Structures are given as structure tokens and as C-alpha cells.
Image (cartoon, rainbow, N blue to C red; front, side):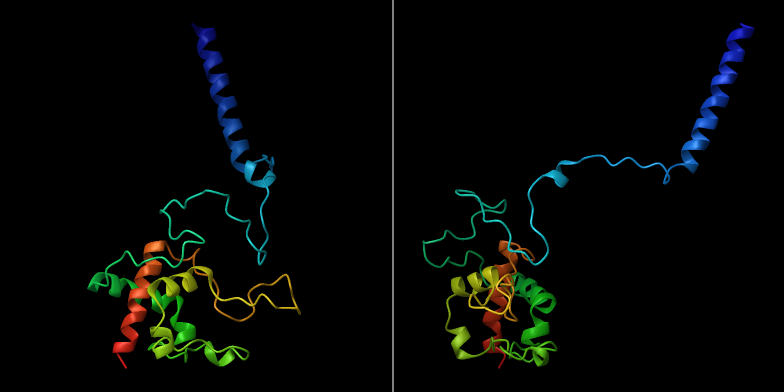
Length: 183
């Protein structure tokens, strides 16, 4: 019985010493574990993302099918959608297009080559909802950029498909439709 008690005390002291050693060596001893994210193919910042695999559908559902024309707006332009679109517009669009959508945002003064579109103009308002959705999804980029061919974004509208879900892009389209009425 006495031997068992002594062994228990020795193991408790050893465990306490090991715990103390681990506390002080926490950020000193490092072992780099290989994770699958490090060994799979990826793309760098400002590099074009890899193409979408064939016959794949986004998690949130098919937004549109290439080659099938412009998508139809499945979101009714009710108060909830327009309010949500106004909030998203303020976060993602207002800095270039301005509060009333006239292309006079705070960033617009610094855009020399191509000014932001006037979203309240008849030209933009005459576009279909699907056309506006595709512009929000794919952005507007310059394929003839010969100075820096690796950079596809050349001061024009970036794609917002990674920032906004499909539903949120339709909400922004519904809000843009109200900009004409506010003139």
C-alpha cells in the first residue's frame, strides 16, 4: 500500500512537471503538420480563379445557365427585397456609383479611364433584370488590357459573385430599379 502511494506521488509530480514544461514550451516547440490545403492546387492573389468544373451547380442553386440567355428575376421587388438591396448597395456599390446611383461616389473622382455608370439613367434602367444580374455577377473587365495582361480588372467594375449570394444580387437589382423613380 505504501509503495502504491509513493508511485502515485511520483507520477503526480512528474505529470505536474510535464504540464509546467508544456506551458512554457507551448510556442517554442513547433511541428509543421502537413494539411491538405497546402498540397492542393490553388491560385494567388489577383490571379484568375480556376474555371468552374463542368456540370457543377453552386451550393445556393443555379443562378443562370451559360448559353441559355439572361436569367429571369425570381425575387419579387417587395419592401424587404428593396430594403436589403439598399443596404447591400450602400456597402458594395455606393463608393463608386454614389448615393443616388448617378456615378458620383467618393471613389469616382479617382477613376480616370472609365467613370462609373449612372444607374438612374435611361440606358441602364432599360436593361433587363437578367442583364443587371450578370453585370453584378461577372463585373466589367477589359479583355484588351495589353499593358498588364495578367490583370483582368483594369479600373472597371469588379465581379461581386464572391461577395454577394445569388439572392443578394437579385435584391441589389431590385433596389437599382428604384433609383429611376427617386429622380
